[in-house]
Image 1: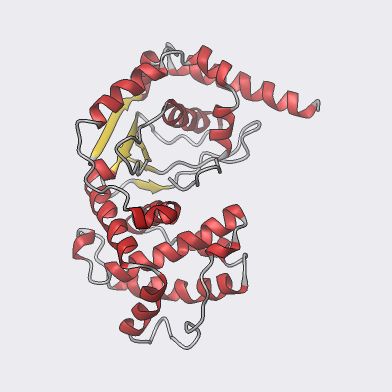
Image 2 (image 1 turned 30 degrees about the vertical axis):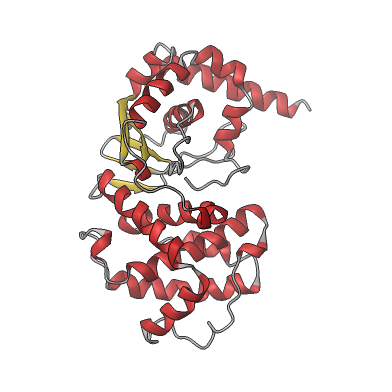
Length: 310
């Protein structure tokens, strides 16, 4: 969920640049994807993308992702650390938001639905600002970092929350907050939020893949969250291959998360698909997970060798 249009992660790049390999190893992926998308269309699009939010679809989806991190007790410090490196405004925002999140953490009961959180609107605005900072870091587009004019006079720990809310409200439109919260509400209901959950599980680097991390792991299932925002938006074969790729890296790098199932989730439609890893491998034509792992390991070594010979 975290990557922007036009910007992909290392595993996605490996998948997209090796169509012949994936066509050989998983020849029937599109058959499975068509079946999944047929089920998706049975679910109405409860939270469509509002026209006025279209330009901010990247930060909006990333902010929803942060709600998942928040619910699973992730500090989100790494997001602020990245954002602080871009501009002086980014550094000021990171220094301000970190203690504010600590304050909001104390007033939030993670056992309750997001809809019942007292400061959910302020939290959504903070997450959207953080998402803009992270996008600036990932793309180099510093115009995403908002001006901190008027922020320096406020105190994140002792200042009145109404005053803090006023600054964030000025910088994040209500329509964006409302859509973000609607998607986050539905996502919370779709995910098994509780114990034994890992937010952004890291699967590491291997061969030409210089790093990889998933969305969420819980109770034997690896989840990939896609906030597909229009009636024409569909899951793609690469989404299945990405989940299978994470499963392979989990084994090759001895991460040893007990991944038994993979899942695709679209909260805007209240949709969740789950299937056993071995069953998915058979359906897409890989015959077995071991076959897929052996083939992918060989391809990664080959790609690294070719890179070294350039």
